[in-house]
Image (cartoon, rainbow, N blue to C red; front, side, top):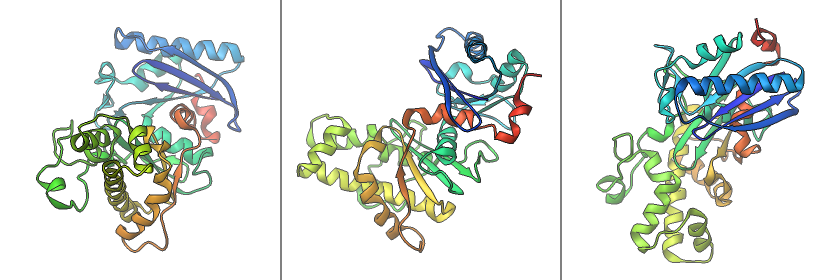
Length: 309
């Protein structure tokens, strides 16, 4: 049995999968808002409770909004700041008396969709997270590619490729990372909302902007065309470097139907001589991809090694 845990800022979700990927149990509890030690204890109790209910033990994988530094062994780059500077995998392992694997939540999304989601059966899958921010994960041969510094797939904090005109050069928005013109500052949900508001003097949600564009509103239509073009340029760089079998889109913006009709041809135009349009797919597992990917951090042949010692 595989146990996957998605550790978020407000909730901790656990998912139990049998060896074939069938869901055995799914539960959520609130994330403690006190301190790191309470978070570790909450995960421990959730695992023990799940195993008691199912009368079996499982390997444990955890998806977090950050990464374990290969240099220090400590959590870094986590928006759940109480995790930063702690050896979460080692601490959970000590509490549960087994090896625990901890991985970035975007990487877990990519792994989930490659294992039994939209990218099932494909060798190289890029999971593109488009929502409040822009993130990503890479899965090759059924395994996560984390990179030497644990930041593989973090395309949101690279500059927007081939900037066009003064809007994208002189007036590039500042990203929270401190730089200007990051892909995230152009292609995230908040970016689309802000760019539309600056022209229309009216603040709307992303679905409202998409609806207006479909109805022929000139400002909304123009901003959506710019959004598709910027996103296509950004994805084209990924394609030229990684050449994935598929890009699976997650996050709130994955619900924009136009992504799947507008992007493939545009990406083909910008990428380095691909032989046909890039395969761009809507995710299959949605919000469950993170917790499913955490469970899939253990291959079937490895599960026994992740059981309690």
